[in-house]
Image (cartoon, rainbow, N blue to C red; front, top):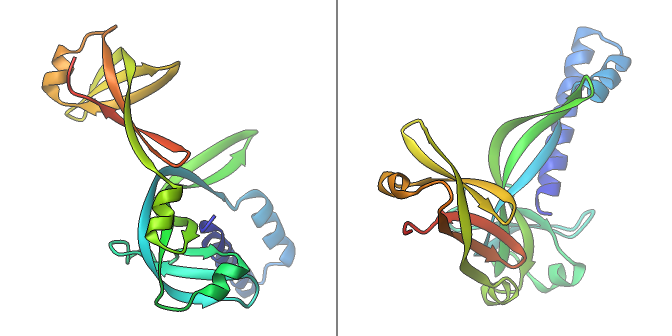
Amino acid sequence: MGLTKYAEDLNKSQAKSILYALAFLGLPLLGLVIYLAFFTPDDEYLLKELVIREAIIIQMDNSEKPWIRVSVPGLENQPDLWIEASQDFYNAHRLQDWVGVRLGKYDKFAAKKQDGKKYRRFEFQVWGVEEIYNSLADAQADNPVQRYNTPGKVVGKEVKDHRSYLILDLEGKRAKTVVEKSFYDRAQIGDTVRAQFESVGEFTRFLGVVNTI
């Protein structure tokens, strides 16, 4: 995916920083090996959302692989929107060309194993380019966006931090969603509500519930 180049560059930078620090302190290289093997967290990314957008090519790098970097209106604060393209796509495009992209929004976690258990720590959210297309129209055609409703059963209710939540059973899976206080008061355990979903291509996410019973 498009986060690959970003993650590779970030990990290389972190390793270099550790190496310089150990060298400055006079620690042996073995210390670096032990640190990287047992203490350095691995990056994990959890996909939260997919969107189809128009983007402009702002950088091209064919030194090792055909990489393309784009800028997406509204996401100018995301400087690492790289994707490895096919050689044919790379050859067919130039800087400042407008193209279509499928973007993924990810939660980034630092993960490590300790005492036989795996721990994850949330760090931040980041966007990555999943696919690149010749045009926005091509991207939209390949990734149709649909919204639909399915029945969900209320199996729990919760108020936390002045927010009202319903806990739903959606075909055997649990989901918790924020609802309006008036809807929360009307909903009873065992009620059936309409759960909303959105699909982009093959990716589907739960949006919440329709506020009617």
